[in-house]
Length: 138
Ligand code: CDP
Ligand code: MG
Image 1 (tube, protein in one colour):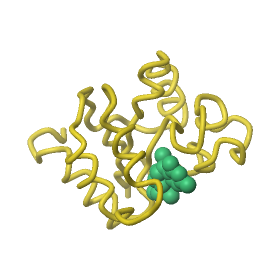
Image 2 (image 1 turned 30 degrees about the horizontal axis):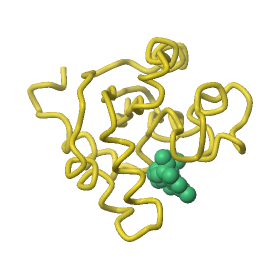
Image 3 (image 1 turned 90 degrees about the horizontal axis):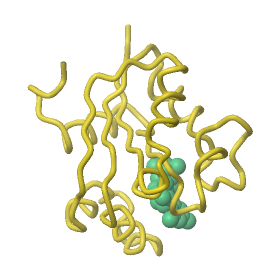
């Protein structure tokens, strides 16, 4: 059965003009786009999204970065979508990301690392519901 996951093309990648290339990688890997929208988010919205990281040393810088410019929110679908997207993304720190991964190709630093992907079924459900209403999922 197909599975859904949530992804973000982060503000660094949008700013650098990599949105189309990243969407092409996602598409080539067999994901269907269930929903997509480009928008700018507030710092409180970023803090709510990343609440699981509250208290970590990078939390303030991360949420400032995520609210620094437009980003692209995505709901993606395929068999094994959650694990397969994590693999396609590569390691959090692009210095450790394997060749061919999105972060290896497009990320600039451990913070400005081009893409987000849900890490489990429960976080995928929370993250999709945080950004998308039911009527937006077609
Ligand atoms: O995004 P991913 O699941 O790979 O990593 P995470 O550990 O859930 O961290 C969330 C995000 O915080 C990362 O994607 C980075 O943008 C940022 N981060 C950071 O700025 N510095 C760190 N040491 C770890 C994460
Ligand atoms: Mg994570």
